[in-house]
Length: 83
Image (cartoon, rainbow, N blue to C red; front, side, top):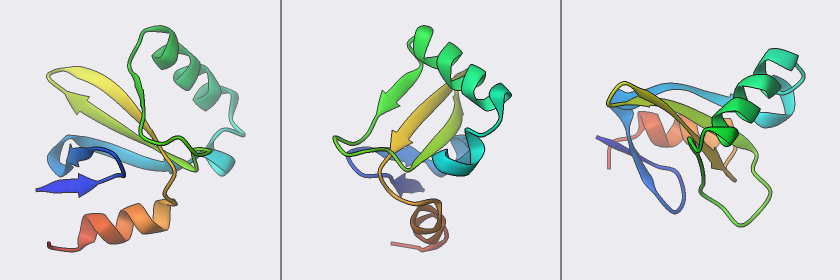
């Protein structure tokens, strides 16, 4: 099964977590994590708009971060629905 996250679909089984950018980036550890992922080329931007959330996945032993314009509530609703 896949999660439609805008311009891309992500395998649900690979998702580690879905996080709100406004609340989670208050923590310095989260900001450092995102900065390191971007520096290492593991961030994919799924929107041309301002990102509202990010999805962390584990694919083939590598963490990836997807920045998305959808809210965490919308992504959770999509993840729980069966298409």
